[in-house]
Length: 115
Image 1 (cartoon, rainbow, N blue to C red):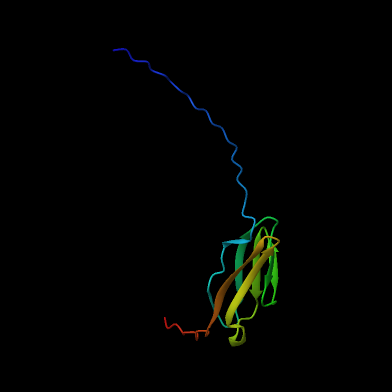
Image 2 (cartoon, rainbow, N blue to C red):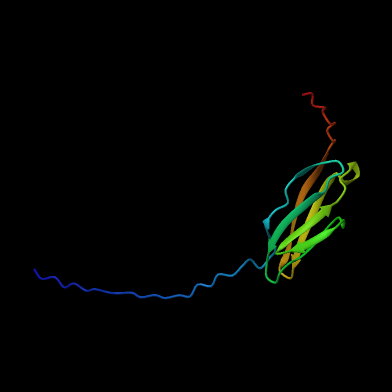
């Protein structure tokens, strides 16, 4: 009995290109905040997309943008500022929204210490 063995070799190559998301994507979402009355609240988020999405807020109180972080700052939290806040990121490929809630805490009365 004779055996004829053949060895075949298949070679394949490909190029892999990794690109960031094209449509807006919140890479850091807004956190729920609970802030004492009269204090400052700051909602922060980060977003990716190509081209870089434009971030707008439903409430224009004070808006910051630094080092890729988009922030909404509420400098004097009160009962009137409680509620939901939404950031919207848009570019030519789409739109993303992120919402969080701001709660106001009543200030605590100072407790006298007796030593």
